Image (cartoon, rainbow, N blue to C red; front, top):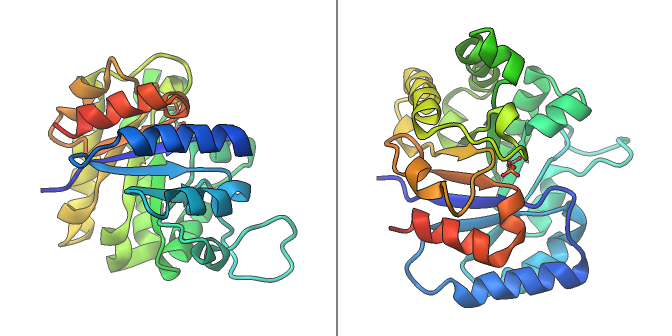
Length: 248
Ligand code: PGA
């Protein structure tokens, strides 16, 4: 049985003061019986978050990494640099990276490979736009996104986490219904099991306007192993409610 994982995606939010308040509030209220909890923070704050979370059950991650190992890539951050700050997870191929930074399926696959080589668990994000869903292309799109990652990573695929995030549900307040999400998760699970004998280890998270009110019904679905939480991860009470729903 896979333990549930709730990962916050802070995106480009936070400050030294706000991060401290948020993490102290979450850490204090976590208690002992809870699912796995992670926060993916802007890289500039990793040192601070590492300090604040070192003695807590919260693990920390980054939101992106370079596909290169090192060298003349101004502005990029490598997997080994992230490793220096105790990073456990890194988001790869978030739809905002795909959309605003032109990240292709192949680049996402290479970044996944780079993270795995450094011993960091990539949370590989896949998801369709509203136009793609309405055109009946959801299965095609997410399968192609995942296939590129499987192709480039072979048997190491069992070490990734997948996040299904329908683009139309991100930051919009429109959540996929539990049945819609489950349908895609089951399909992704099938694709993963065809690619790896150890696919049982792979958690598939749902992301897209997950909040305190809808988390439980999503997390009840047999193939939803946790959540990637944007907006609701910035408020301690909301984030803790989702963690509580995943810890039943
Ligand atoms: P949201 O973001 O929860 O604010 O919709 C999720 C994400 O982008 O990871």
